[in-house]
Image (tube, rainbow, N blue to C red; front, side):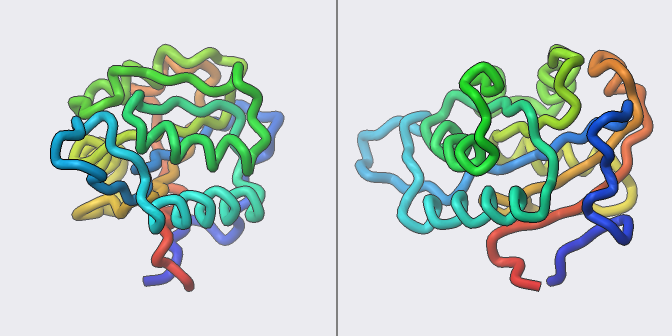
Length: 183
């Protein structure tokens, strides 16, 4: 499957406009180190660390803008976030852990986005299936996915000046990418 875009130029988001973007990222591949381990404590496995580094570096190299990152508090999402924050040189003040994103209902995504400070124009949210797949499928009729791949990135853009207007905004599909996509 080739990388999916709705426009010819991935760098079509000028930084100094009202245009905002959201990258929805499913955490990278995780493992079960022990049967006694709780779900929230599951770390990335070796493949997951490789996936997270690959995707973070791929998006950064393509100049996909990112200035704020919101992550579930689960260990695997925190670890995935670390790879993106390093690739984008995000300061600790531009990274937030939000417990509501751990096994959320799809509506939680709206709340998290609408609470984001308006000074950030390009945000990423790292969370879990099935909620992340359910939510991105609500956003646009342009594309539907059956299952967000691990470390998959579903990106949208919207022309709003305040995040609190996100729910009622016109959402445009931007791209879908994931580690196994080599095209």
